[in-house]
Amino acid sequence: MNNKQTKIYNQIRATASTTLAKIHRVQEDSQFFAVLKNFPPYLKKRQELKKIFRVAFHNQTKTLIISNVGANLISKTVKSGKMYALHHKGLIVLHPEHPTEMVDLGIVGDILRSEYIILRAESACTPSFLMGSQRCNCFDQWLQTQELAANFNPLPTIISDATDPEIGIKNYFNLSGEMPVSSASEGQAFILMHLSSQNGMGSGAENNKFRSDTAEAAHLRHRGEYSAEQVLNVSMAGGFETIGLSPDPRKLNNFYGYQIPAIVLDYLGLEKPVIILSNNPEKIRQLEKFGFEVKTLHLFGRVDKFDRQETADRKNEFHHCISVRNINNDKELEDLEHEIRRTITQDKDHKSGSDRISSREKPTYLVGNRTKNW
Ligand SMILES: [Zn+2]
Image 1 (spheres, protein in one colour):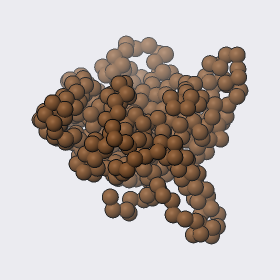
Image 2: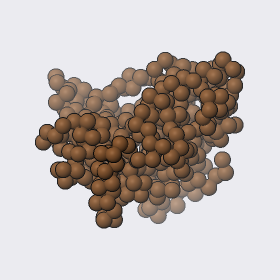
Image 3: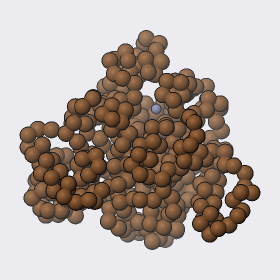
Image 4: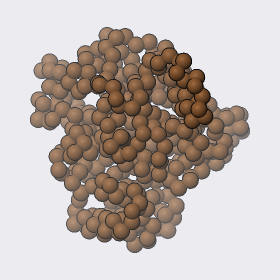
């Protein structure tokens, strides 16, 4: 951060420290506009900006958060073409000693009514998302998450059948604080979190160093470690080491890259239990560290001969809880949907004192709280 940015950051940090709240919302005009002018989005003062952007401070991590209020989108899943409604926000998370983190957030369903929030926190992977690379399963996992979100939250006909669906979708979500909620949805809430700055496992990060250009650094570094794998025939961790990086730079700065999902959930004001769709033990551990009650559902997306090598590296070098057996994509989707419904029902039964739970078979995918040894 430059001197001006550091000064603004320190002022807000001092104000925020006088409150006990997890999140201090910056409302005061001079601080609010100073942030928007000196940090991204770098906009000069206009009163309307207060309706479009939000500035907040996360007390536990001392991070400054800048977000837009978001837009409601009619979306379509890639795999089966199902329509659903999604609220899309963009956020950046800043700290003077850590890299800039950028997050794209998609919220589906009704957060207020849902007992659990189902979360997929995806570190960016351009080879699979943009180029359709089959070397890894990242995009397949994202596609499965889309399908699940849409299955639990189909687009209401009042929007899909309307002559101008844009009018319907505009009013579909309302903000309750910073949480988009929809009285039109009875569905289970999903949070699709894309950690856009974390390309190549956050390879733009450096230890104890603020970088404003994290995404640019990651852009070339990720190509570098990926190229090294093929040019020099090294493993995934070997690719990082070849270009002088530690494998999984999200672990640098006291696991800062892994803390971003918890910071974002705190920013939303979310205090509900989370079902995370993940195979990465660190993503789970950090949410728990921040006080979230977490259940885990493994999500493989795809395992076949095309991604077997990277899957094995993830398992052996990065300790992901992942199967190297072939995965039937459609069957996995069915199983996940089943497990989610079962978890929600079990929890309700449990709360109402039903004894039916003990007679049920143990879920296949559900790991539960992290008592299991990975
Ligand atoms: Zn990938």
